Amino acid sequence: MKKNYKKFFFTVLLILGIILAVIYRESFNNANITNLLDRFGFLAPLIFIFVYALATILFLPGLILTILSGILFGPLLGTIYSITGATIGATLAFINARYLLYEKIEKMIEGGKLEYIKRSVEEEGWRFVAFTRLVPLFPFNLLNYSFGLTKIKLSEYIWSSFLFMLPGTFAYVYFGHTGSEVVTGGDNLMQTILIFIAIFTTITYLPIYIKKIRKIDIIDN
Image: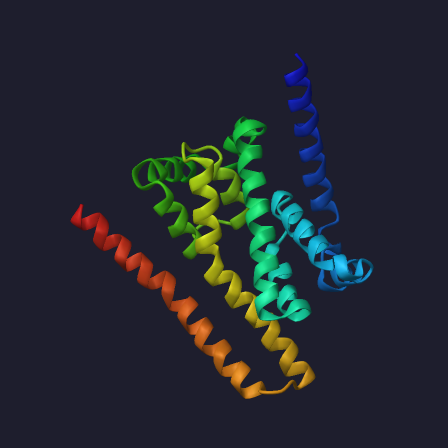
């Protein structure tokens, strides 16, 4: 009984949080997030990671945060903070779906798509997680919950998500960094822009290449 009470409490809390996130979605913007982080001084990175994880759970757009991290923290630290927040959020969404919102998440996802995800995970395991992280087939936040409905191990889900979200995360963080360099006219501006072009060219082509390889593997099998 006590366990069911806790489950009910956390389920209601999560649903309430998602509802509030939808209502105040327009307030989730660069200016407000930056003002929030400015209040915490040296603790800003920890608050940023917390906000990123919370946003992932509540279906708020993480791309805003990823780009903003490049502006505020630079390409290296921005990538570290963003991938940490995204991985924590993705893990908590996975756990919520598996242990709290199983039936509700099933109803949210179109039956054919959910069956495709379940079947693919059964056939390919972590490799399918890697594929979806590199090739954006489904909305990121909903995908995190979807994986909680599959049979993949939590440990495999965490490390494969972390590793294969890194390329895209770094690309968008660098995009934010490049934008700030252009606005402020920072040193080595041309070099920064050329690196940005190279990164985004690679990231743009990578999903196409992976799709081709995956189709070849399926045909061979």
